[in-house]
Image 1 (cartoon, rainbow, N blue to C red):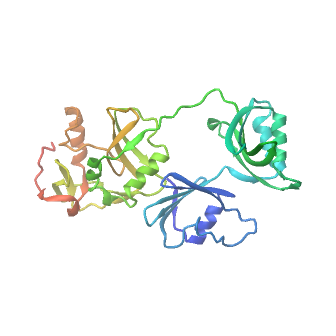
Image 2 (cartoon, rainbow, N blue to C red):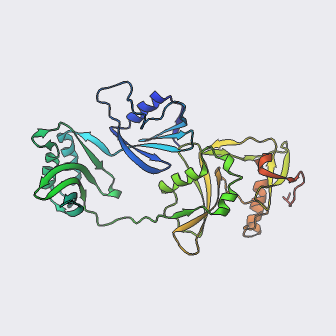
Image 3 (tube, rainbow, N blue to C red):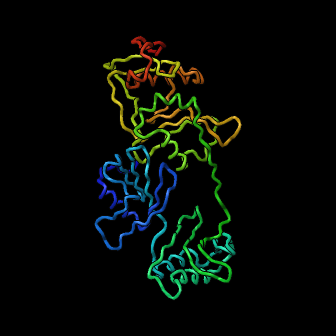
Length: 361
């Protein structure tokens, strides 16, 4: 979990600028734009309301490694991520290129415009040619820049690479962008699963919706874009996701003999739940997701339920309990646990102090 702290807008701006010359902003996990936040003149404050949230617009800030997450009052999740783009001198970038590329098989991915049409070409390139391309990137006509922005990727899983903009014309071809990378013979395949919210799920979530401090739809979108649902392939999936920020309140708590216990059916539920009148809900950064794979498409999953917390335990009357052994484990758990009672979430006509099922000794 990120380090959740209280910051005013000026302090937040400084933390964002400390990420680097460029930051990428994601909204609910989806990439929005890359911003330049460098401050070569050492101003106390950069006037850029498009990038930095203002006081009163946000309620939570989580500081992580190379990432700052801001929870806006409207429920949007703003994530500022250190970009791999940075300014380098020629000496600095050539030193990096030597460490990454010298003695390896290299490829050049070139984006260009030929006769008014955009195209991409990929072909082998020697290390000496790479050095020449990088040196030429510092020139615009006869003018030479002392620093240029490059994207340096040091993660071998994505292939080692250096990317940069160019602006040169060769006959009828205008070169726009170069990406130099180490040729890789292996590439990891990722399965991107589609997450479906059915009408039944939305109706089911009417009970849990108020437990979230961020709209649950935004949490689903964030989790999808962050890849939390990638590569799952089981028929029925229950998982706990830990977020770098608080997402809501867990209603589950331990009980003792001093607790006043009631039983009732929650709205849109057919079974009884165990409640305590003495418990308190707890703020948490964890969320339970339950999904069921589609019968038609193996990469589509239907959301069954989700709620803040880290325990996924069936209730004693759940029809999906497999056998008597599992039922006994559930009974043991619910003898010492209950949900915090909220009269707005239950069908009050079903409320009773008497247990509607046998909890055992």
